[in-house]
Length: 486
Image 1 (cartoon, rainbow, N blue to C red):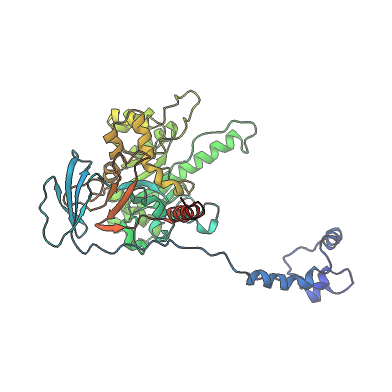
Image 2: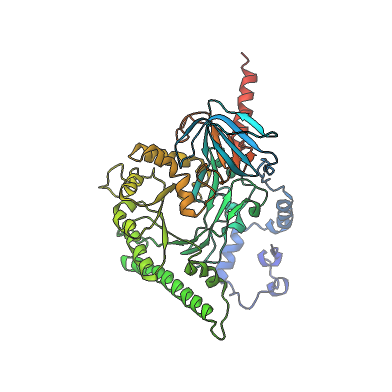
């Protein structure tokens, strides 16, 4: 940071040559006499003498320390493990009481009520416990932010409206304190999504444990993300923009999305045809897998008007999409079913979006989509304000269960269904051949508040589920025990 010390001659009322002491660039306009007099009256005459020392003191002050997570990533599974005696909930099939699940080298190799256990296996008795597949957060910014009020810890968005070449994986912080907090409540896989702009970039699916982003990666890129502009117009007389200007902004944003994909399609066709003089462009290169059908397109939209516009655009552009948000998706259930558009429902505990909506219009969204035959899963809203509360994902499904969604479907909405929508064949259920990514609970429904996650495995590795919050809890529990001995 280049700090130019004040020139004593520039501030002192004594007559002297300002040009000689503090040369003024020709591009800077000269102050008027009144402005110069005002600046002299506002600045103490002795201020310049200690200003350099003040700046030196500020530079020498110790900066606040930023701590990384104290949790040590688990090492790869070295010996086969058999979890015996627990009630196993495969999710994709009926539960297995007093069952055994056997896994080796990170994969489930046997599952059932009577599983032979070879020698050299670590056998763990879990009588009275329950085993479930790990939860999957299908819309998250975990690893991209730490403290919402500290700009230096936020890396969730790039500047500019069109950034298809942005990759969320490169910005993920494996030492984030929010990751252990989320996985302590059973969230073992996360779909990390970039924000900002219109075409926001490429997401990544990560396992919630690892030394580096590459070690945590399950799939990258996982999807391309488009945030459809809000089509709502504020007609309040106190609105900062007129109705006409707001409509212009909306039309401009929609036009940018359309033109970007039209340009990218032309680029894709020219590349396939081997057109002479073809020049590579990283932005359009990133969209090639979307047109090839190998990278899904996730479009974020909530209102009925947005969803209608998105479906019309997808049909016109001949694109297969996944809808993210979908607060009004239940109003468009027949169109979503007709186009076979899956929905990632975010924040099913939100308030109704209209005054005349029933209080349960959002709570019952998932149940209505299921009745209409629309594929769906449940997630948080993916905003940086929700990242510290990602652990509450199971309770989003629990709320839907209280308003019409069957209990087994609510559990699938945060395990099997997000795995299917994201194309994660190894995750989402407990089956032979799938990853040994699972949680062990204290007994009872994991979507219920009193149920606690007591242990977790990711790819057969036993994960440390302690976190900063549990360590602080234990610290101050010990303090009060010492002060109040029984």
